Image (tube, rainbow over all chains, first blue to last red; front, side, top):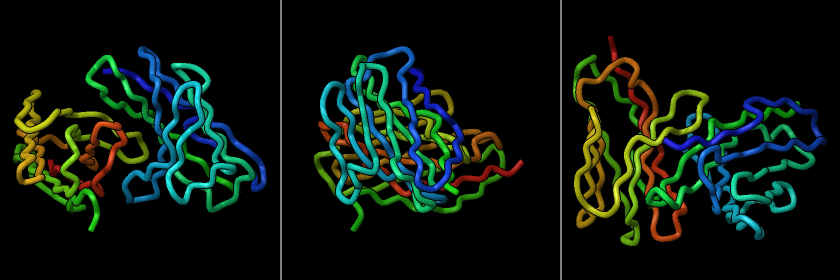
Length: 116
Length: 110
């Protein structure tokens, strides 16, 4: 199946700093990517829908200025957690939609963020 | 009421048994149905993808969708210890924004 790559897999940052997570579709073009957050033993919570070349659509309750999303190309979307705090520590997962295969959605491996 | 209901389990079965998982949903606009497998600390892996009602088989996996009952199922035949994971049902309408079930944790005992 299609591959979606996330980087970094693990990141530790100091409180108050910003961290960027990349999501790449490796063998297909993804006009739409999605960013999720997952807490331990819970299901995925959609944060925002990222559309190539336009502004992301954020879900209710998600701070746009804190979670900056950029989808500059058909294979890359980035999530930047700005001024990170310990409560932002979580598992962040992206997914990408492959419109050539029935709009199937593939997930990345996820990125563990720990803010200390 | 949640849009997608899934029993979180946990579900424990002996090796070789059939694992039966299911989800119910309330949004009649859903027409794309997926099952994902998620190992601990990993991203979800797509197992099955079904459009509208019907059955789909892929190896040891069978997915069923009954839109009239708003009910979907996943069956895993000849289960193996490597099938131990959390299984997430997901579905979407035409905008492809996925709505997930809570996930069912499955353990296959050797």
